[in-house]
Image 1 (cartoon, helix red, strand yellow):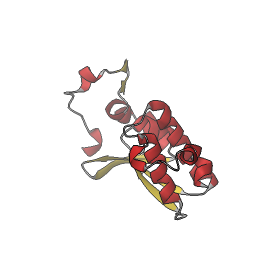
Image 2 (cartoon, helix red, strand yellow):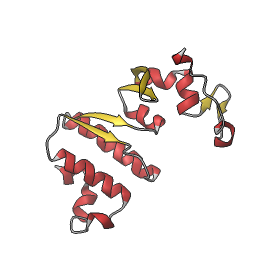
Image 3 (cartoon, rainbow, N blue to C red):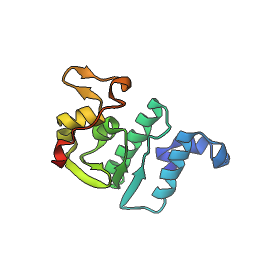
Image 4 (tube, helix red, strand yellow):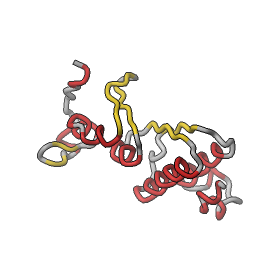
Length: 142
């Protein structure tokens, strides 16, 4: 089953895990977890350090595993745009506290989430230079 979802691992099965790419390591970690036939998996930053095309591939596989193998996925992810694109429901946490939750579509349309986590404003995208010293309003904490 794992090789079915991650055919690249079949090709690399004789390689030592210390010598495979970051994406292949992520696939290997998910595959090891799948061998226990879990009902739910917690994935911590599955996109961290991966090339954008590989991030898309990993998230597509996560979606397939959820749909085909009925494995619930709990993602801890800072790539909010990608997470909300694939999630059904989400929680926004600040300093260990849930400050906002809702279905993914509602969160993606929330003005604060757009500005603070997706870098979007009413006038379009902000550059990193414009927001690096930006003080968040955090209206939801008021």
